[in-house]
Amino acid sequence: MHLVTFLYVATVARLAELRREAERGDSPVPTAVIIAGLVVAATAVTGLVLSKAKGWMESIPDK
Image (cartoon, rainbow, N blue to C red):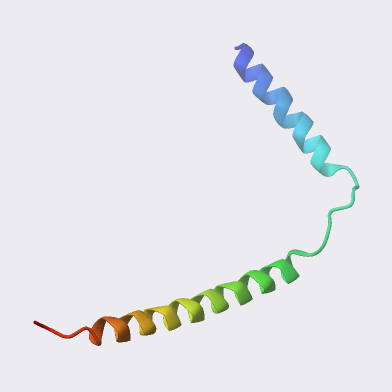
């Protein structure tokens, strides 16, 4: 029963902490835009590396 009481008190304290008016930082939208840009750039780099590696592997002569 002590564990349940501890979890209840910890949850109530954390919720009270989250409800306070405090500086919450920037909007998550710019962060999401940056992440999406990084994903697009990573995909482009991965595609470029894949095509270069495939071309290099195809240039190796067969026995």
